[in-house]
Length: 405
Image (tube, rainbow, N blue to C red; front, side, top):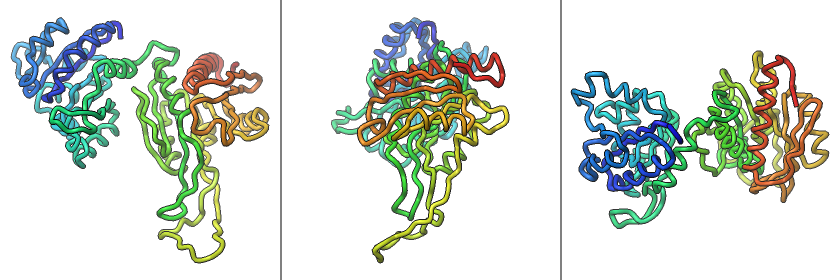
């Protein structure tokens, strides 16, 4: 975070006392911190505390005549490399979701093109309230990163979800949100991950054992390498990597639609998702009753998401995955050629390998080359894979129409 400019918004919750420690942690990492406080926040902590810790005068009022003579709220919005609101109360989250501009902090968030993150802090029932849930969903859909909250003892004496994350953890997560000076800086990477579900009836579906862990690791590694990352995910129980924009889908058709909506302007497409090859041709509108000894399902092909991207004019650099139970390298290379991919990562899967575990074994193939990355934790393999992709992408751009190893 050396030299990064962080605008820290502090709103009126008891967790505001932790924000002073957060300023210290951000400064320790080399960040320049500008604190903006709401009127309610000043009831909990005085601005002088934040001024002493940040080394900058605290901004509190949209109607500050001295600052606003030069459109200070616009200047601050442009100044920030990232905006973090911690604590973010239920009231502030509601105003942000509504697009309100009724105080300095809310106005800055509307006027800034920088990444915005919020660290919710409130009573457990307020966090679980349907209104707050809807506001959080709306903010996430707009690309706002939601950091936390944690579960634990609360100032009101209750126990549950709603505590603001600790300052050290917030500083680490914010660090991950900022674009890194890596080999993919300035590049847009679109990744698919997880399984799809194909409906049989309203309560049953056909799916597979993909946990999404490999795809989420690749998304994290691509973000660490400096890329803008969009992650289209099937149904999984995984947190979104910091700094990654996530689009949730369920079926192969929905994944195809999401990819089509996001692929324009993409530099690199990485398909780690285990997309269903077939789906029930005639899903029932009602629950199928157990009335006979056998049930026959007529299946039809689903859309091939990976092949459709590879066949686009002016397509991105396309990377596929091949999960195989036998002849791993042979089948992966056939898929590479059949779908006209630039690169493919192959791994063996079984009851004990590949699926729903922390480790994997990847073999990476190009048209005329291969590299065995060996076995290891998925995040470590993802980082190696992303480095290979970045190198091959750069080489392919130098000579259009060629793929390099």
